[in-house]
Image 1 (spheres, rainbow, N blue to C red):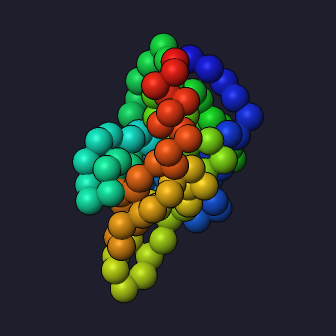
Image 2: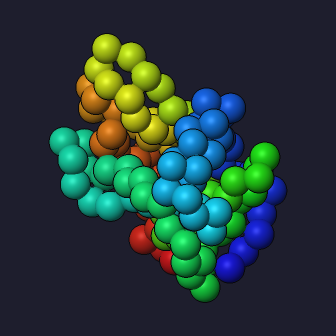
Length: 124
């Protein structure tokens, strides 16, 4: 587990929604986990879940009494990203404003990574 100072930020709206979800679930040990998986129409897809467990390779980001977890592999694609929560005509959802994304799909849940990030990963 790595405690870091906000490489990924949470908006007030996202913080409020996570607090609400924790309250509704009645479990103060829940944390927001954000992760990236292959798939979607643009190549990669964001995932969100509530999780009690902190894994050894997780990056832990705490703000305003909530905790966000990001696994080490996903974190490299989320540096300087912002997690937000929106409610509009398309529905209610968490979204990521990600400066590392080259393109995103119309719904905003999938994206492609800038080529230089993929090349850096291959070198490691």
